[in-house]
Length: 288
Ligand SMILES: [Zn+2]
Image 1 (cartoon, rainbow, N blue to C red):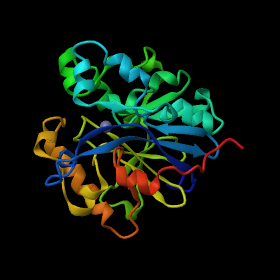
Image 2 (cartoon, helix red, strand yellow):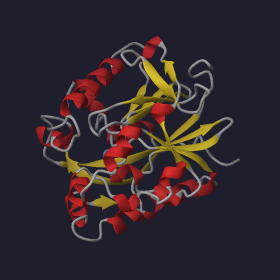
Image 3 (cartoon, protein in one colour):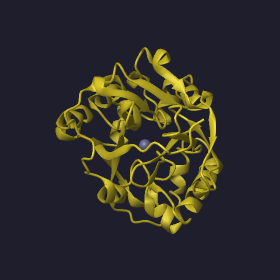
Image 4 (cartoon, helix red, strand yellow):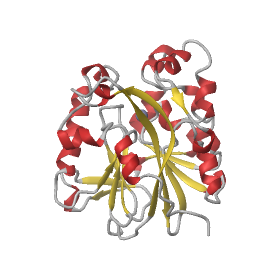
């Protein structure tokens, strides 16, 4: 087994559309004014395996999947903005890449704002957790919609292309990642390690790696980095949407402890506008 993180990858953070919610939805005690919740996507370049994505953000498929009742309620409650220049394929093209250049897509969880672009990558392999895949196939269109699952966004051949993180070998995380102790070795070389972050959804695949610094992509385990800094969980109303509030709190507490520990990795929540302003817009990964 290789040492964790002995292989370093390149990383850029992309913004693929956004929606708006009051700040207090993401931070208890926050303001009522609407703030942007970007849909952030990780673009990762592995020195041998090539290009990978962490989630896909929004896409035109989201608008198609929410055209009819009852799915249109999703779009009414959460209006989405996706300027043409932010479409994922357009951003990849501007770096000299095509959809077929993406080898693997790590799916944090199957909520629509994370998987809306999967259909644009017909050759990519997917890695997600088995627990979350099972939840997005639950019976009942309304029940799925209430949990932000839109089946129309999922490629028909997903079962052939999907690999489960739980089936991959476990590896101890270095001490600086405490209280997270073990992870799944997602590529078999210790470069990208998958950590389960349950609560927001049935399960969530967090991905840990080293670029110039350690980075931890955490999906929706926390919506704004200020939540970890100030120990502010989301509003009580938001908990109604979570799969398991107690598990959300346990995951949040572990992330908070990690954030405040010495040598903490850069923790990147998928919808944090502060993180986007601090970390987004870099172009380390381009076709040469
Ligand atoms: Zn989300």
